[in-house]
Image 1 (cartoon, each protein chain N blue to C red):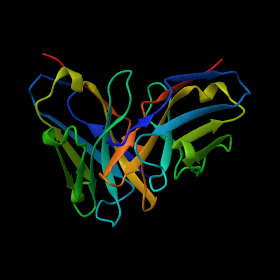
Image 2 (cartoon, rainbow over the protein chains, first blue to last red):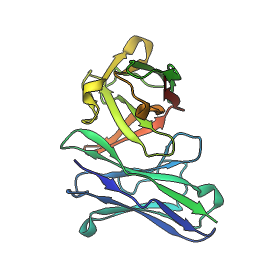
Image 3 (cartoon, rainbow over the protein chains, first blue to last red):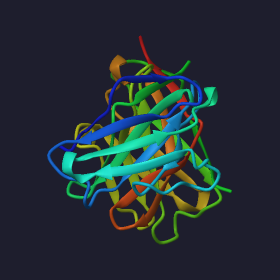
Image 4 (cartoon, rainbow over the protein chains, first blue to last red):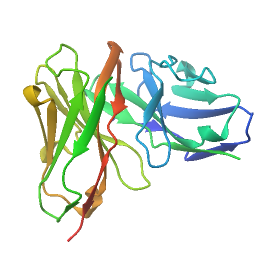
Length: 112
Length: 123
């Protein structure tokens, strides 16, 4: 089964840039695009990146997404960190071979 | 504006069947391409996709839970119902329903989500 692996936690200071990785198992992201969700404590997830690198309206351009096919990984980069960015971040992809949706294990971002 | 809201019991006993209802507005499940999914999150743990139903009544289930899940829709009521049989304490989680989005083939995600409902499984 297709799986997505994320680091459990990352931390960085306000104003800095942080990158969260998401590594796919056994298949590439070539035909399986990646989305990223932000989940603040006590709230439902919201989309910050879809289709690898697209930002929904209302998401600041401090958030960006990218794919590295050579390492079979996706990345979420947040620049100019703010304390309000402190949240859990999940990557997600659609496994078109098995027709199901897959989430990564989530990364807790601490901004301190 | 699309909104979704989950409803159902907050407490179920082991071996019982859980029935959750997702009531939505701002879209129709009779429109081509539309889908509604269920995702759960145990306390302090990651998101797990459970099931999804499409506008044409096609259904998808998580392979690991397929034998326990049933998803149905009532288009006239704007509702989607998820049933999960043989509940166990490990099924304690916040259960979310969400609107399925797709920008093109291979791009499939959930947005927006309902607020979620916490279901505790305990005797």
